[in-house]
Length: 152
Image (cartoon, rainbow, N blue to C red):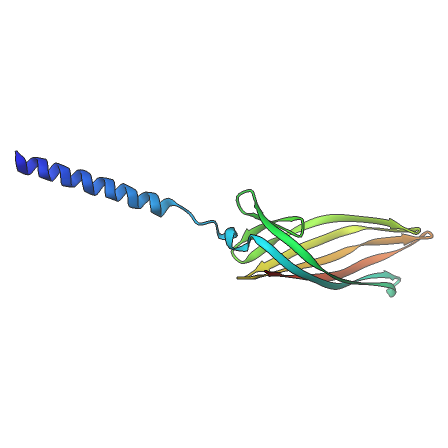
């Protein structure tokens, strides 16, 4: 009888230890955690306005600052106020509309943002396309920017 009691006790001990290991195995690490934090960024690029195939305006973009990267939902990171889905080391493309009306010039279009992540670096590429209208003349708007964020 003593042997049966010892065998049952050892079996119960192994089962409880086994369940403990399974619980630890099922805990998932959120890969996004390593990207959360404060970053310094530099954004550079150029937007062009064209009419009849000729560039009529060039808008250079050059900006620096800081951004706080945070998590959202199950797979998203909020980068530069954009809610971007993280898939491996890629930030999947999202399309955002833009409109700008200043000094009689109207621009309407979209920006496609995509990116990549690595240890302490996030790169966002933004592609602009749309139309520009001024004084009844219409043309196109296109260009791109690259934003490089470096973790502090």
